[in-house]
Length: 230
Image 1 (cartoon, one colour):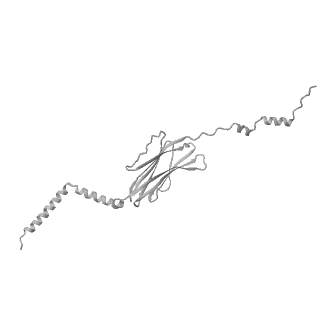
Image 2 (cartoon, rainbow, N blue to C red):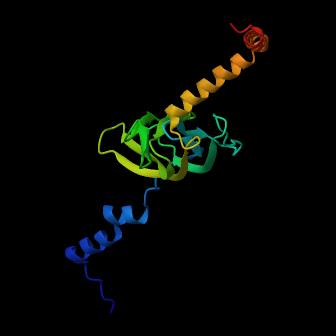
Image 3 (cartoon, one colour):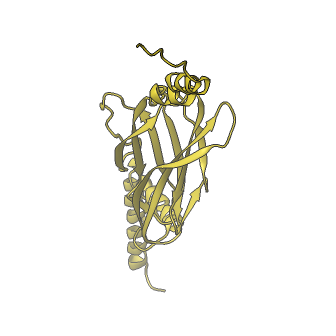
């Protein structure tokens, strides 16, 4: 005798259907969305130029340049004769499509007059170089050590909080010297006086003038000797 199968319970059927149909959370876990593509990075050359020697009281220039160097062909070159140059390669994220990128630089050099002081800001654009200049003036003779800082600040174009990160810190050293123990201003006056005397001595008529004065002096002395006594 055959037994007919019992009808399925509505509660059991509902539980089986629910188990067979994946929930939205399970479907999302099983098929995750791809992560965003990483930002393309841009290779740049960072160059610092400074005077290794400065006469006390005189002013000189410190330069910082951040330029594109995709092929690694940029060679640090001094703009001013006698300056020292240091360079390194840095990599920055290419987020110019979504952020305003600012380059901020500061020169810390205790004991010297530095202008401008504090942070100096320049807009960093794709494929464009930025350059910062400082004027430095040592008051006294001595050895001075400092650091050139470079920061990047990212401001989202869609709004929101900006972020800031240090890109490089490059040390420099400057020796403030004197000219025969003189500061810059007396040394300049001495140099001007020496140049004037040298130019006068170089005139063609100066030797003739000295010869004429010497002859006149000799004639006066002879005249005094030959004058009869009263």
